[in-house]
Amino acid sequence: MGSVQRAMRLLECVAGHENGAPAKQLARETGLALPTAYHLLRTLVHEGYLCRDKGLFFLGDAAVRLSSGAAQQKRRSTIVDALARWRDAIGVPVYYAVYQEGEIEVMCVSDTPGNPAVEEWADFRETAHAHAIGQCLLAQLDETARRDHLDRYPVQSLTPYTVRDNHALLRRLERASRLEPVTERQEYALGTVCAAIPITAGTAAATMAISLPAHQADRLVSAIEQLQREIGQLLGSLALSISI
Image (tube, rainbow, N blue to C red; front, top):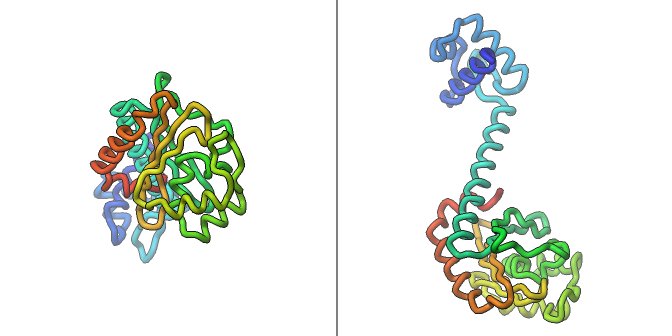
């Protein structure tokens, strides 16, 4: 344990020197004996956590990967915390999804036993035409990307309310504003209504969505408007966290 602690102190010390630092300076700043510092530095270089150039030590690729992973976890935590806060404030399940590498990906869902999320009875990736999340993401794509998606996942009837075919869906998406919420009523699952808000950061297509039982459909508009206001208050940090 002591060796691990000393190695971590060296890593933290190296991270504080953007232009690198020699072993003697690192030993002095960490309070380690020079032979101990040399031994640990050689080990960290061997393992890829540090690299050495002209007598100076820098962070290596392995340390950079650790840092990247920590940043990714922090971004995910930002989204998870925000969804839970909005779920409690509005009293509805809240979803976060993105369109990446040609696929719909639901990244996070926040619900409660009293307000459960929609059961994914048909694969969300294959049924973008039917749910608000998918329609909102498809509306953010250009025409070529939309048609490519529908070539791979053509419209299929899920309920009596599902859009009829690819052409009808494309017409609907062309009429939709890229900045306005998308709503669907029982198109994916009978007894459920949903709404989704487009979230754009750079070239990424993303969405936040909510769902309600059909008998509470009169709450849908006010709930999605409240979610828009909540998102607006967090937009800066949300934009930084858009890719989990």
